[in-house]
Image (cartoon, rainbow, N blue to C red; front, side, top):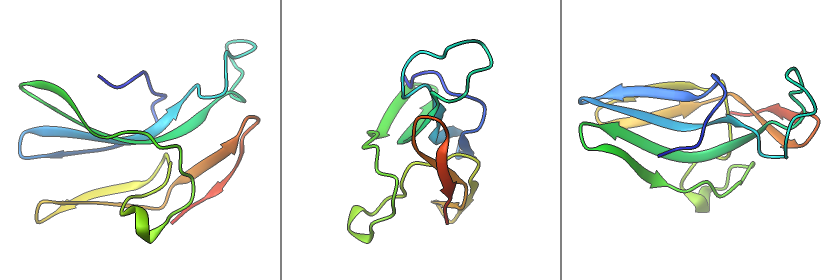
Length: 107
């Protein structure tokens, strides 16, 4: 089952299953207080949830840049997610390169 995420994940429903890609979590250690967001990082793992439970489809490899050789997006949150003809498309969003919210928009 995936680890806890902040609410800014990339989620789609298709054929009775819920698909979750990436999203924000505490990648860079324990926060210094309840409002400390500087420890948040982003994942690029891919999960499916259906009647059988959770299935990990891709592990988080912590890649933040897109590489055509990888055949998958880099880490991101707040992306647009849509299913067309059994294919899940993910576009845009943002990523974080390290602690203290060093990041940028991606496409």
